Image 1: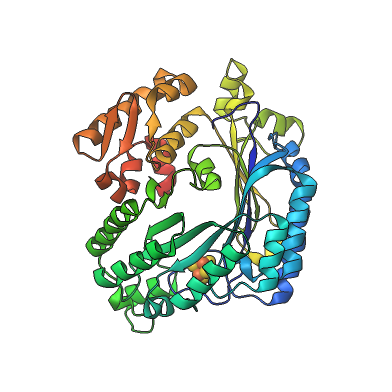
Image 2: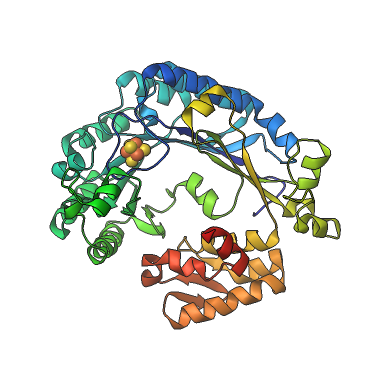
Length: 435
Ligand code: SF4
C-alpha cells in the first residue's frame, strides 16, 4: 500500500437496500422493509463509533483525517432524509472530514425524494453516481430498472439545481435486447446530458442472478436469449470509450471516463492502494497494520492457521517496517447477521509479495499504469523481476506497452484484463484463488 505519514482515509458505507432486484444482480442487496433501514443505520453508526477500537485491536492504523466518503449499494437514495443525516453526522463525529472532501452517494433514477436530496446537500454530499445502465426505456425495464430516460433527465436537472454538478452516469454494455444501434442511442443521450463522469461496464452475468440462471437453464422471462454475445459486448465497450473521448470524457480506468480533474477520487484510492475503511454489509477495508500488534493486544487475530505469526511479519522484525503489512478485512454479507451485530470480521494480512501482486493488477486498471521503478523502490528487485518477465510476454502479445519504466494496458489488454492480471499472480496465489 502506498503510505505516507499524512495518509488520509476513505470511508465506504454500503447501503444494501433496493426497490426491486435487477435481473443480472448478485450483490448482497435486496428488497427489505423500511423498518430494516433504521435498524441498519443504527448498526452502521455503531460500527463507525467502534472503528478506532476495532482497528486498535487488530493492530491497524485508522487515520482520523478523511478525504473521501462513498455511500454505495444497493440504493442509498432510498434512505429517509433523517437516516442520511444521521450517517453523515456520525462520520463527522468520529472522523475529521476535509473541507474539500469528495462525498459521493449512489442514487437510482426516480428513487430520490426532494427531502432526501435536501438531506444529502445539507450533509455535504457533493457528488452523485446515477445508476442509469441504459437510456433506452425498454432495455432498462427489461433488466428490472424502474426508470425512463425522461426520469433520468429530470433527476439530473434536480441534482444540478440542488448544487450537485459532479455527476456520474453508469451504463452497462450487454443488457438483454441491446443492439449496437440502441447502444449508440444511450451513448448519445449520455453525451447530451453533459455529465462530467461516466462508468461503462461490460455485463458479466453471475450464474446466481436470475438472468444467469435463465441463461444456463433456458426460459424467456428475463430475455436471456437476447443478451448480446461477447464480441458484440466488446464492440459496444470500445465504441463507448471512443465516443466518450470525443466528447471530452477521457478514459482513466478500465470502466471509467471523466473530464480532466473530475476522476472519482474515492475509486482512485482503490487502484492507487491508499487506505480505506468499509462499513456496513459486505464491505471491505484495507489498512496499514502490524499483525504482531494484533496478537499482543490479544484480539486472537493475526496468527496463521498453525498459530504462528505469518511469515512476512517474521521478516518484518528483521528490517521491514511494520508498515509493510496490510490488513484486509471484510464484513458479513448476511443482513440478519449484520443487524444482530454478531458477524465476525474476516481478516487477512498481506505481506510484501501479495501487496506487490496487487500493485500490478490494481495499477494496470488505470490508464496511468504501473511504474516499475517505483515498485522496485517499494518492494525490491527480487519481487519485481519476475513480474517484468510477464510484462515482456504481454508486450509481445500487444496486451500491454512498456515505455520508460511504465507499463500500461493496450485497448486489447483492457478487453481481457482479467486474463492479463493472472500473469502477475504467483503460483500459490493462483492456486488459492482457484481453491
Ligand atoms: S440497483 Fe444495483 S444493487 Fe440494487 S438490484 Fe440493481 S444492480 Fe443490484
